[in-house]
Length: 407
Image 1 (cartoon, helix red, strand yellow):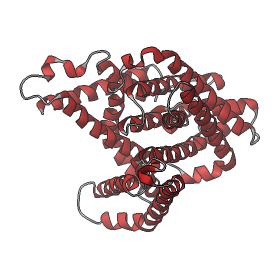
Image 2: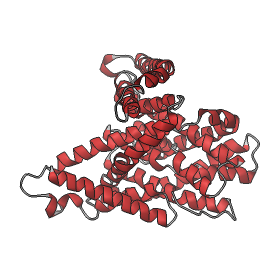
Image 3: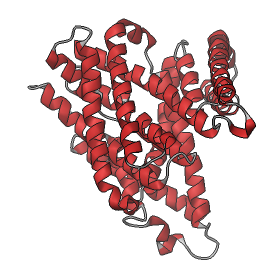
Image 4: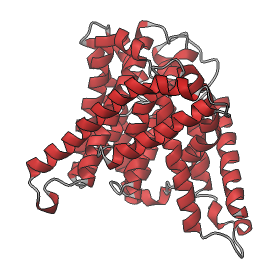
């Protein structure tokens, strides 16, 4: 166990240090935290092979990796829970039509082209569709922070981009849940008919969404008011996290959807209560100081650069496709609702970054056996590059606006 403590300390220190360095150069800290994991992985410094971390009584490397994966999975759940808490339903309704069609274009085009490219490269349709699913992602946090630094968050394009990014995330989570549901519950499996399997899975998903949303709207506010009266440290946040974990568990066990979907729904529902601000503030402290950095660094640790092998050309094509399809898809959606060409371009560029949302989808696919390590490495590369180019792209399409601080 002492070696495990030291490993976690090294990972946290490295992630925060690299995050601070990337912030210093004007890029999101998420980029540095992932790169910290890559540097510590077997591709570079090989953290798990250091002599000080071995010796008599040390935990096997496989056990350490399993523990880190559990902590990373919790980081994913809490990240999605916070994303749900920060989802502004009022703002989403205000941007309405423009944001919806921008998001729709940014989901449909990447999904179709990504799936086609994957299948053209020899992957099965489930894997190809999963690749397309990852390309639908957009990072709300990176987009919002970059627009804030440019002084454009409250502009017409900024508001639409932010709303579209949130809607995009909702669509992406739903698509991910459907894809994972059918991968883990094959059509026609165990002698059942294809139609029966499809209807069964969709029925379970619909029932889960209806029940979870109804229960949350009816009980979360009074539940937290009651809990808040109990004289215990951080009782409100603790109670909310209990519900978050229960929703995550029930989503996968009963709803046949991704566990992160349950965490996101719980966050959205808690975000409609008067405790929203308190929950966001306190959840961010423990999540971003421990669980989220471990998740991001673990993405890098699990990324074996050498596993790319001869697939580098495919990864490059995938990156270009990820950038171009977002700009065109979201741009066309904006253009169709009355935006000018320049305004549509700005919305499209703002939607390019995959960020932590793309990492969540990629990690989920790897942990559930939908994709292998080679595809995972390709996906992480897509996330890194798109996260890197978004602040640069926004600076180019908003001339005269200077980024004064980094994410």
